[in-house]
Image (cartoon, rainbow, N blue to C red; front, side, top):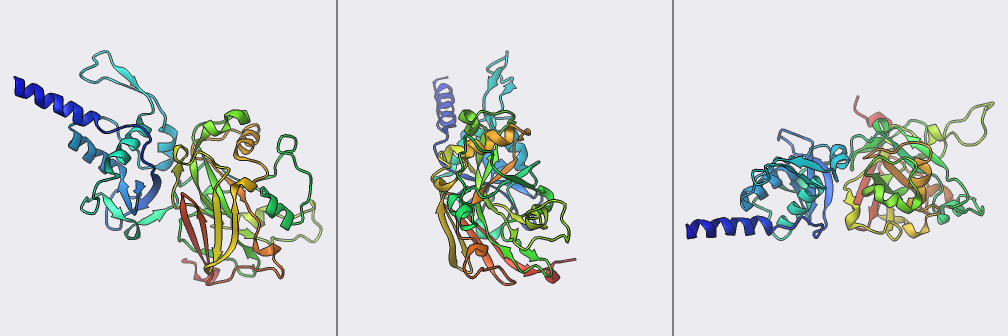
Length: 367
């Protein structure tokens, strides 16, 4: 009996030894493994490896002698919707049942805390990043909303020298179609025939974590799930009408080209990136730095963006706000610079990663 008690006690200690607190930073990704079923998969990036979170979770439970009915979804948007959910369970040791809060988030914390110092090379569910296909992290959000002229350096280089007060003045928002515009990291952008003014805009993407409607700015960050990278591909030529009913640029043709929202590669949950207003962003074209700035240059901070947008429409879990770009775009240079076939745009954000987009001609697009 003494031996059995010791074994039971040891198993309990081992099971409890894995913390379910956000102690180990990680990134989330959607990825595919060639030749393996059940793709795409939900992945956790630790160092230079990506773990299939469900297989990693099963392995963790076996090693700690625990049982669990929690199964993480393979779809990023569903994970975000359920991230902080409370579930009611009926474990053997609690016949009356009990509530578990933030059960999906806590499972991810456990996985990160358990594996962060383990040797991952030999584990069948841990892949080198260069051997898998990293997809856009959310395919697809319900809404993709974009901030226009939201950095002081960009507004001024575009000739906007107005006195703007984020508490007084409404921002300018435009939308892109998530299904038509979002493409994977590394996927080409196909330049339409006759369009020779395609520009670069590197942006911080804000991922909404729970339904948001009429959210006060003081609570806005509570509605954020995390952060990623968005390339707001822009056609500075747009389309023209001989006798336009409405004056000004055609935002639809200039911003909503097919594939004009490369997205990813990873999402960093907000608990590991607590200040969205001090993040370094850099855009390179063919290795040459074109944009180099910080989110502290925003005119409307993330709180004001969410408060304004949610005053008009409901934002849903997984929705993406592309929060605007900094100075250094091609069209503002003297002389102007634009992208052409063969160019490669790389947008890097500290703590998140690098989003790479090669330029190709529309004639090269697969039929």
